[in-house]
Length: 428
Image 1: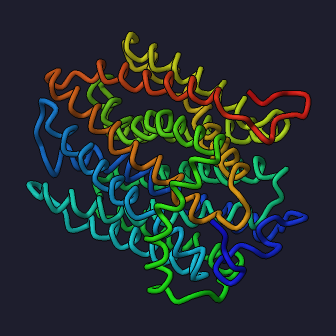
Image 2: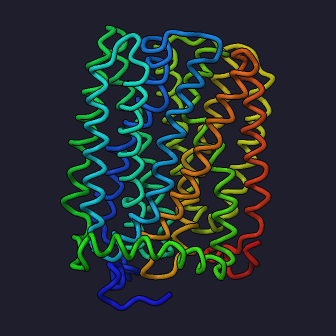
């Protein structure tokens, strides 16, 4: 499929910059700092336990079931809409506007959590879905900026910078949230999270490349829908990109599922209190940040595929260990160990995806990247929640289900040729 120059937002020099735009890079990375408070507080450490214990107040796997269904529904919405929205952004030149719109949706959703109380199961379900769709939607357009702001040979480091700052943002957000959780002021936690995201996202909206003039949004939407079949046809001929997205579907499913069930696992299987969960994940943010920074340069030197392969092996070992270990101290060690690879697996995935995308198709292909990640995210949480429910609330069988996803994804990844691997290597 070919596009006329006016049809695509990213056909200028910005698509493959000759040098890194430091101001744009730091403002882009700072958006990761801003938005990372959301997954830390809302999807990982605080809201899942609040939703299960306060809003639902039931045991026997019921809380796990409803929580994982909420995660899966929001992932399904993004999976269905992201490719169309990406194509709209490419054609209409409205990337920054879409990113801003979804950011506001997330902020409003989080602030609305102040209305929740015991028994408001459905309201909590819907409010979380709204907030999560906003967060994930903004990330689609945020990711698509990477080729605009850094040359290909530095995208691994820039991507790692974003995730590294993101984990520091998560740590700060968790530290602030802990103060209010200990005082049982949950409304203040939700308002703090919403304000943190909104305020610290401002530099990105000021400094990132401006939207370009394109076709009207409605016209672009119609064309975007027609583009979906053509994109699928294109991917059939892009062997490495297609193979990567298939592998990504499996291994990112395991990663994202662990993120959204980790707090429930820490509380139910290993006996952590709400405060203990926050402290645990506060510590994990630093190991994850260390991993994102430490493996950013190797991602550029050796190629993101090799880094991904190593990290997936680490997570496979961690998943098997989680099935057998007992006690909070062992879980602490395992969480810090696994956290080191968390930032790297996401950062290296983004860098490899960026290197495989044809010029001028960044937003729509990152839409498909979100499609694979979020459609898989429908499956993983549902499997974990259902297996736990069938086991009468025992979460350990679910650990092995997630480990299998890492193994399958890692094996499929070996079919991908890494264009960023050293010239002396085949990239396989």
